[in-house]
Amino acid sequence: MSKFIFVTGGVTSSLGKGIISASLAKLLQARGLKVTIQKFDPYINVDPGTLNPYEHGECYVTDDGAETDLDLGHYERFLNISTSQANNVTTGRIYQTVINKERQGAYLGKTVQIIPHITDEIKRRIKLLETNGDYDVVITELGGTVGDIESLPYLESLRQMKRELKKKDCLVIHLTLIPYLKAAGEHKTKPTQHSVKELQMAGIIPDILVCRTESHITDEIKEKLALFCNVEKEHVIEAIDADTIYRVPVLMQEEKLDQIVIDKLELTPKHSPNMERWVEFLTKYKNPKHEVNIVLVGKYNELPDAYKSIHEAFVHAGAENECKVNVIPIHSENLEDTYLPLEIHKIHGVLVAPGFGDRGIEGKIHAIQYVREKGIPFFGICLGMQCAVVEHFRNVVGLDDVSSTEVNSETKNPVIGLMPDQANISNKGGTMRLGAYQCDLKEGSIAMDAYNSEHISERHRHRYEFNNDYLEEMEAHGLKAVGTNPDTGLVEIVEREDHPFFIGVQYHPELKSRVEEPHPLFIAFVEAAVQYKKAKEMVNSL
Image (cartoon, rainbow, N blue to C red):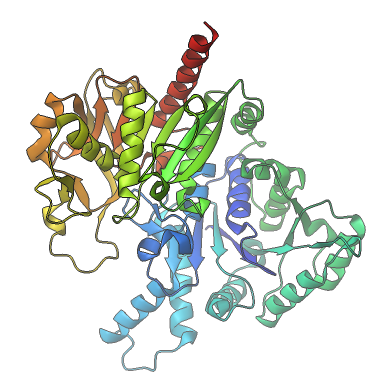
């Protein structure tokens, strides 16, 4: 039987429940335990697939095609595992399931209520991972902040589970904030006391307090928190701000969070903690031998979380290359009437990011023309790859009125078009090409050299595809299709023959980059940027 750990949050949002959950999971995994994590989000949306990136950050896609919260990206990056639809549940999905059952007569005419029907469905979803996998520990992160109205059904479900399970099979970790008032010259515990009081009013007493703080808290503060929050002093854990999220597992290990959890749940680790590869990654990350500037051309750059996985993939690939990667965000709309607003010697690579809609498209195309002509390493992802195709047909092939039908439905040359099975879809949620698809690579390509394999599987999230009617003409002018779907023949990867590093992919490689397994295309791109910088410096020194 699995042990259950619940992580709740108090005082304020964005404290980092996902990072704490992933860090604890990593520490338990490092002891040989089989661990998984799930996220319960309190919003009514069925999934984040229809949410604006400005509203919720990136939509993370799993192998099975689930559109999920970006915290699942942290889970996968930390644990080096693949998650699924079962790892992310929203209130919208919970209510949708219960309402569908009611319509089918599953409740035999009974009045459908929050208790027991909604809470029973929440508990069923919590236990689903235990049913689907042989896990020692299931960690459940409850989204939102204690005290929010929308969080109440989840807290009630947690209360019921704590009552139903043995004490050694379930514990609650409450993440809270200890603010420091500069004028008073001291940390304040009152917000945490009120947060724990809210939990207690819901019938839940936390077993462990993890206290987010900008500076070290004293033993006196821990004593005070233990006294007023009804926890043991040893179970008050300091979570001081870290220079990188990847240092948090090490900090939590120093605070003995994993050992406390093991003792309370009476777990039996397979071996002593093995964090060697993690520490090696941190060492490379903190001691780079090189430094490059990568321009990220996107349309949601105001919110870094909109491209969270891309930023993290650069961290992983940078460490692998012992290189500090400075990601410089530039809004694509700012490039529609000008070239990249940086001195050329300061740019060592350009990534054109994914996105939807026509806003900023011309800026992306303009940026691609610039890097193609200047020989700067280029990496296009999803819409970035499609823009590279449009730019090629406009400026290299020389066709008139070239576009994607997503941007111009009346274009004479639709080199990017809607897939036939998408043509009559009106509902937007969960209806794109989603999840993992196979791709065959051509020998001698950048992609095959990077992957070191002829066959790969990558995750997708898009509606529009390259129009194969233009394949022969595209390749005749130097842009080659080097990766195709073996079942459909759809083009997945394009590369330029006359360029040192120019690659566009229809899928999202950033979603499969891990701390301990950086994505091969990001590794190759960063390496190309390093080599480009060295070559430029050599030329300038002559």
